[in-house]
Image (tube, rainbow, N blue to C red; front, side, top):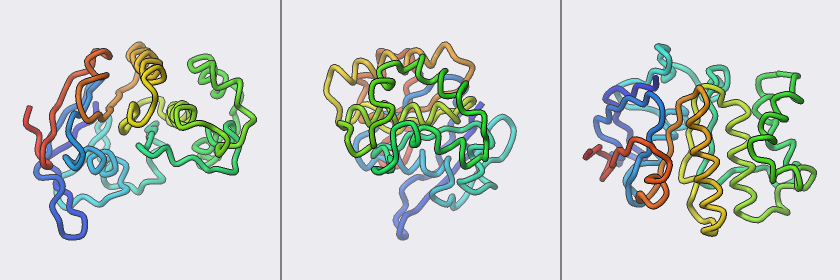
Length: 211
């Protein structure tokens, strides 16, 4: 279980999150308009942003005491809203990056599992990331998160900025995550797609949970 315990976060002395507490045991969607604090929450879990007060636990370990690079060792995968692929690396290299950071050499089985889950990636596996469409980059970013996120996946705005057909495909893929033994936390600006993935809905407004 992911437990967020009364955290507050500020950026440039502006309070973004105020006293956020949340338990995520399986599948949860954080719903909020732009500026509500969704991405700040995800980045705080990843320790990309510092927490002013409170703490974050995952499987009874206080992960807020660790640096960002340590999150892979806890089986935590992160899909940023803006994808953050490395343009001049191939799709395969981008997907395997988290394993290299762990100095893990057994890549073939891990990659095969991902390609079976998202088979369309096979057709552009050898392409450089800059050659992909925005939608294809979303699929690769999801694959990269999954290859290391065996216990927890953090998916920030996975449906944002993609064509409706691909958004529907992402809904199908993310629904499939529900069958796996992991915890998934996603963000979305409204419930357009979250309502189809059987997720617990939590609404965030002006840095506070309202439901």
